[in-house]
Image 1: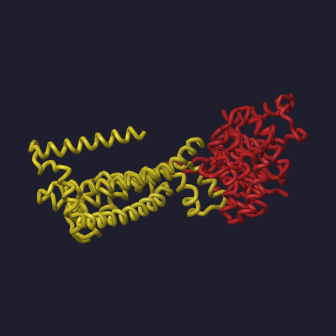
Image 2: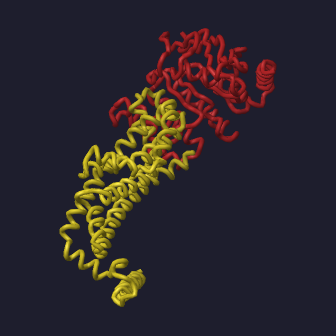
Image 3: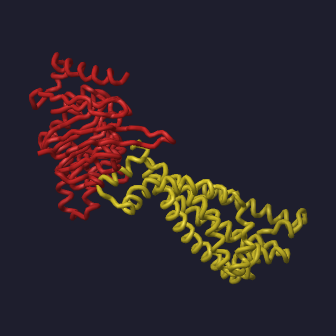
Length: 254
Length: 252
């Protein structure tokens, strides 16, 4: 059973008099426990799609459903989000940042503290619980943001280019650790990136989106066995898949 | 350290003596420059009057500060958090801020009388604009990502503003408070000098018309004391917020 279904989704923006077609006829579904990534050129509407799936903006046509229920507003109990910018609150410690969504829901302090310490442990930051965001590296801040996205125990995690601001090495390591977190929690993850390597390495399925208007032009199953090691990135098969996606995107991009 | 303090005090005492001697020697008219002893005499003679006036002025300023801060911040938060309202309002506010507000005082006096009420209202008016404008700027500078994050965790608009946007905008708000509070102090004292029945500005103005220069100086010294107190309080506040500002710089 799919956790999230997107059917016939379209989004037009007004820009002066002209209508900009950001998304057109986007249809796909993500099954429970899967890691699905959407790749596409910059400005193809990836983030718009994610914002609709998060209930932050409304589509022009079509709909997104989570566990059968239409998404018309943010659903914090079912959908967790991680953004490109960690958006941590600078005056709160790492632990308090992770606790923030639960504090907002008036979860009692002892329960939320225990749960959030476990989450910090999961992302490898239990020793940094009392550190403030400015005392953490970029990668560490993004780990805190991931733990925060997990705090309300959502069914689905939406990730909007979460590692784009990190350097190559850190990015690769974060991807590796994210898979570890995903395997331990069994969450369904919908991930957006423009890095083909990142998409293939992480995912069960890669959705390829064309440039504006954004449409899904290919769905590729990635069947490298799990748990995956970073070595697969250098393999011939990996290179073949990457070339194929690259051609798909660049042909349409002309 | 101790030796340095003693040196500063000795220099100050020497300057005071010099000042006293210059005035006594008749080089300058005592109407233009009062000797330190005249100031002390004024304090001794009319200390109670000054104290009552100080109390009135401090109360007016205190009330005006509370209202100006509250109105300015609340208005700024509401306007700043809506893109359209901010785009429509900010230019109007900026141009009002550029008008010398004192030209409105005759109107206020006609409507509200010469008593403390018109002083408080003018003080609020003087302080409101910089506070509101800085709050609007601070709120608009908050990264959209924070608002999306707040919505994604189900925060209401009020929760988003109170728990996320307001604290993030606080450094900008505090610089607005610094400017605005200074203008409240000036506004109250100036309008007291223009027309009133009490307060420090009134006493200064009254004695100026009698050429009691010593009294005028003493009143000025008390007014400076108020400004100094307000400034010290604001610097403390700024320093506490500055602690976050550093952290925010680390964040970006």
